[in-house]
Length: 308
Image (cartoon, rainbow, N blue to C red; front, side, top):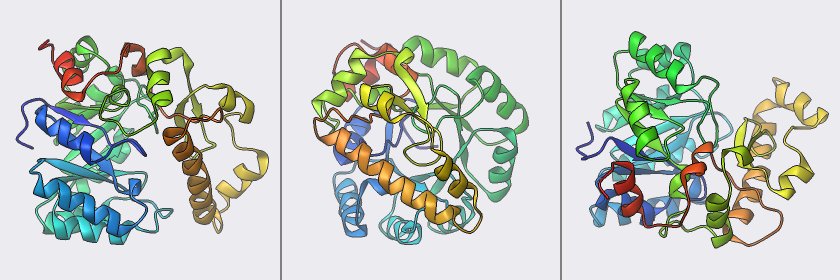
């Protein structure tokens, strides 16, 4: 579908994925995607797209948050369609508008799903593939294990199923593929790469911690998100307080509260990702158990496909 040698997407990671990482992924004969929200302005996103197009780092994708808390969605979609990307990864909402506009420009759309009901919905809307987010994923994880989710989707869905979550080495990659997945989306292990733009402390945390240190929090975006359980996370807790929970459920205020929570939470992640601080909020998934050193992306890919 994408013209790559290995069926691997370097997953779009908030405040981690960037042009340099996607270029390295392309050279390693996989594909990489970047969250549009990694760029504070539309002009910065536009420049990143031009850089990728000019360097011939193809194919590459852009991740779009498609719920109402993303006030920049229409502008992000417009500039990506105008300049041209190979595919979108949609998350946290209804992808209908993205699918329609993307297809008008010959761009594929892969939709994050966590269950069969939503998978059937986006298939009916015209999605080109599913990103099947399981309970081992980093960031916004699903509720089902890959051995339940992948066969369920393969049995009932006709478009490709790309599994997200739990892949950290060649063994786990093969386990997922043997379940019937058409490809995998892999994120956390690439944080500890030489090309990743995050702080050395963040990379060291990926190396030094394991799945046992990964916890779920609703403090960052209002939606459950996996982070490393640092002393700071232990201090602030992982659950929203009573007022936050009430506002998050209020129909009139929900959109605005989610947006505020997202901005506040993402600022904490931004500070932790790029500046050494004891107030660390580092997003990661259980697959960090397989990381024991900081390596170039090319080496990580070679180890995944067992070509070392």
